[in-house]
Length: 115
Length: 111
Figure 1: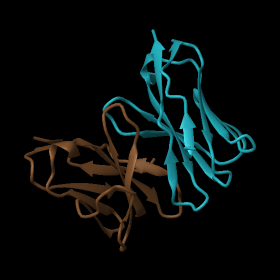
Figure 2: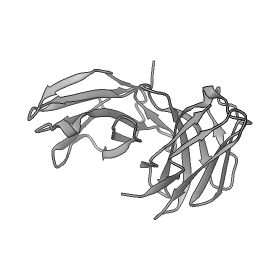
Figure 3: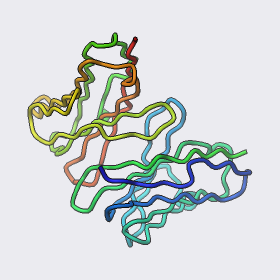
Figure 4: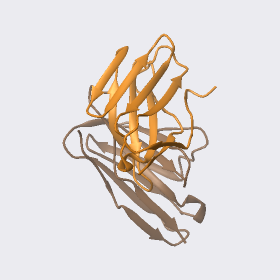
């Protein structure tokens, strides 16, 4: 299957700082990437859909100014959590679909802990 | 009504038994159907996808799709303790780039 790399796998930061998470498709071009958040023992929650070269589409209730998404190339999308607060602590997971295919492949996830 | 519904479980089966996981979806125009496995603390991992009515087998896993009844199921034969995880059903909507995930079914295989 396709490989999606997500970095970092874990980050601990102080409240008020910004954190950038990278999502890369290693062996294919990903025209669309998705960003999810998952709280403990809860289901995946789609935050936004990211299309290469255009603005991301955010789900209702997700603050676009707080969760900045950039999909500057066909292999890289980034999520920046700005001014992180303890309530932003969660498991953030990206996924990507190959061009012309509709199968989502997931990165390993980033566990964010905001102190 | 949720787009994709799954029984949250937990579902417990003894080792060696068949585990049956079910999922229903609301969008009759859905085209593609997926099963993901998610171990605790890890991200989802694709197990199978199915596009056409009927069964699709891959090793110990069989996906079954019935578009008329709008359900998709996953059978795991000869269940192993390592199969203990949460299984997510996902459906690709008619527009192609919309995916809907169920809340997942927690499976425990008892040695």
